[in-house]
Image 1 (spheres, helix red, strand yellow):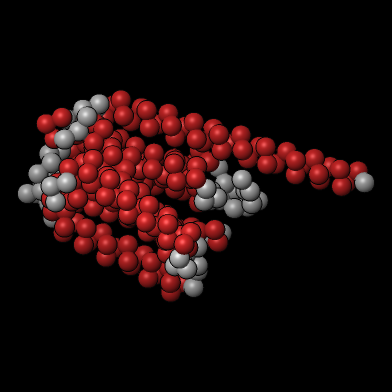
Image 2 (image 1 turned 90 degrees about the horizontal axis):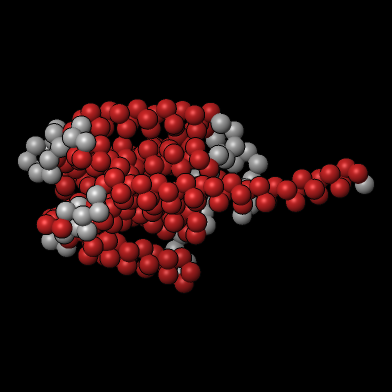
Length: 269
């Protein structure tokens, strides 16, 4: 992996997508753990998780180079906060799963799609590239994180809509999303569709995929899940994420050591 000096975002590799899916799935189970399992409710859980996101984001915006642990902490924070904020928007206050007190999945999706479209419109007006490999400015990174937060919130709503409103259930909805993502992957290799467009579509879809997979693993069997529980699933996903972060640090160290030796050799010469 090539980690450019001064660049604060990860390179887009297979590992990136694995960790993104793990983080978004963790966001679903982690958000549900706070709001439902611990019965904090959607309001209190959203406040706590959004505060964590803000603190992590401020630190991320202030650093000058890529820190894997910090980056994936912010991603996980957008996912967990997105879960509870989406549930608050679609279901209303409390910790239940009925949409009677909220906008419903379709209504919530419309609001969030409008918000995400607004972020991309502002991004366009700034003249900055949507290409995440070119996000090197404070303004660009701020727009990047705004898009991620809204897409992760939208993903929860979309996943719930597919699983609940269409009657697909959790695992069938996950399969549908996975098939769409496979089509996007094929389009990347076999068509001339913009790679930036395909990236953002795939990036947004990882969230409903994580939402449906997370619910399938953690929810009760009576609701179509495997009933592994939010604690167990969250712990396993956190372990996967931590392992990926550790591997990234090792890869970065291996990349930098030869460069450092070449520099020393050049100075000696």
